[in-house]
Image (cartoon, rainbow over all chains, first blue to last red; front, side, top):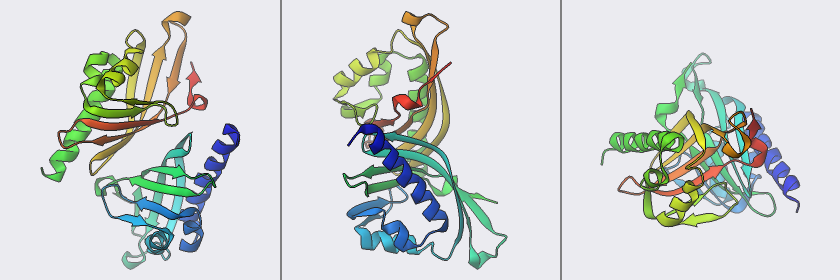
Length: 130
Length: 130
């Protein structure tokens, strides 16, 4: 596979991931991952192993209003690193209560273009209340 | 070690790394790394294994005029991810010829606070000529 095509495919998947984090279901998001993928979000926390566990992880945000915006993206080899801005409204705390998190995520891709591993770098200290 | 102290130590080391990348020697920079550390810069390229190889890698920029600026930093567990801006002037091409690279770096730290692994996410497509 030519390098440029490979990098473009990874770029497309990152953009699709961010669209789905904003506006997709756990089913849609889990489908981007390989069967035996791992998710560590945040880094230092629990590692979710396998697509079923990953589906469970994303299910937690299914009922949360979200907006998502890419800040900057780097694609190298089979990996991507990107900084993005996630704004969420917590229904339990009223529509007025919104918070912003700006993680730096790293993804490793397999030969089929599926996400084999994701690590999200953020901590409670990075969360801002709006 | 309390978490806040640990995160502060990692934060301090990242700031020191960027100061040294701007204005330090290969000796100074290599000293931040563990004896058996690895450096992959850029990701997808050669992996430099061990402090001696890492010293050789940083020696390449000893005679290059550099400026370095942190854009954003995340510290989680034993790791850090940060976006920074590196401006270099290539002496072979005259002082007027400058270029800017904005990598996203990921570092893993050992229990002594040394860098055990560094990966730098950037590609030639991310280099801008000034």
